[in-house]
Image (cartoon, rainbow, N blue to C red):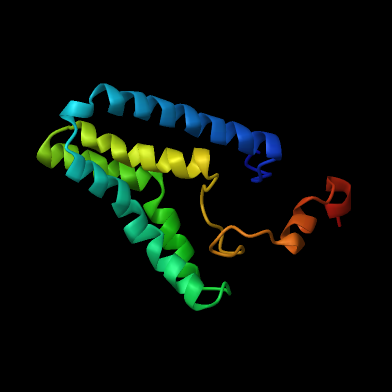
Length: 150
């Protein structure tokens, strides 16, 4: 993947997931090491707020449409709520106003589970909101570069 070819191959996708699993392992180790210092109410809130704001609205809309297309807003909302930039800004503000605490690890823990374990990165508008195979998209993506030239 590069700036001219913004697509993952199976191998690069596995590498991205492996990086996230490594981050998950680090977060897990830190959570376990500081278990008794963790404010669990805040940790649970930090973990779930990402999906409450970013995933649930789109999931509800998707199910109401019977798995059909939903407005792009829901994809964008998911992507906004599931980026390290936004979540990191939220954690930085939390630390600024309340001081740093171990419960903050719940945020990268959540994102690394989504990306490393479940393989969910961002949701392209061209694909269904929930992960389902879309053969016509894959047939286009899997064409050789020679076939793609005009």
